[in-house]
Length: 435
Image (cartoon, rainbow, N blue to C red; front, side, top):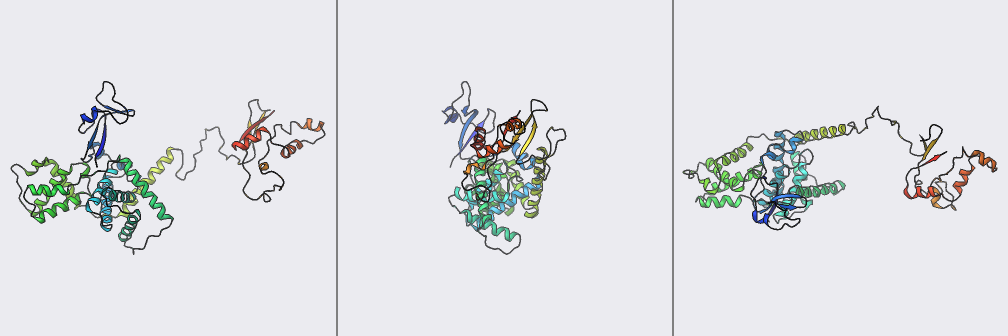
């Protein structure tokens, strides 16, 4: 599987691909007088198709999204370690090949350099990475099996007796969340999920050094490489440098001499600075204290609550969700009536009043329970709007031998007016001014 990346801007890091840049892009065209590729409305310096791993720039490695959410560096590192350990343990229970577990851990590390632990559940993303990696490495597992394995690991971690997972609504919701998390991982990684692992590279390099018969050296180098998956070295260095660092660390541990005039790793393109940095990150794993996942989840929940509270205050809402009343506002804080006639001052002065009558559908239930006769049409359940104020037209009604207000009653029994038909059609409040 090839990885396709588009580099924006002329000064973006990474090797350029002149052949790809010179060709006709799939969408868009080359901008006149420029050395880039126009895809949509953005100009890219080139399209690179490669099988190499995606490495992150230093600015993204120094300041992560979790730090911007207020999470400290130690807590973030612990969450990364615990998440990778969960993926490794779940892969063993699911009987996945080691390459699938390694792919899941690398995808996990990449994702949380683009998203925050505060805004995305570490456990849900771990499940999604296991499920996605199993499909990438052609050893697919069902989501139900992944959920069952993580459910058992949680009970063992909390020292509880494992019980079967109930297939209730909570299980359905969790399954949907994992599916959404998997789609989110693919979206954030741009569907670049290819991972080049140093497993075979270690064996090949030891064959060049004529040390492949030393099984202890091969196994120790392999173990160091598997432990390095819990760090972020796979988003910082190429797999060839990681393989050289694992061999170097294993040879120093077992006190096996390797060529040093010149250093053997220079033959494979690695530098001494890279070797030392990778070895230091691997050795730091063995000095870290074992952390409690419940404590880490509590820290994340505190930061999530602080972010929600800050958003609520920024939107003018109290933490409880109550709207903050503005004393300088010209609107009354009293709630508006749900049904009835609400007076508002009209444009003609104090003597002219505009009335607003809310038109709503009739309540549910039988026609008899709503007080509607059997012979009356169902559409008459809507209140009738009159086009003439009965109070001000009282003189004309009395001259016609009727009492004031009888015209409104007749309107309710008669046919609908044009205003009422429109109100029933759109079901919106209708304002009528009486003069």
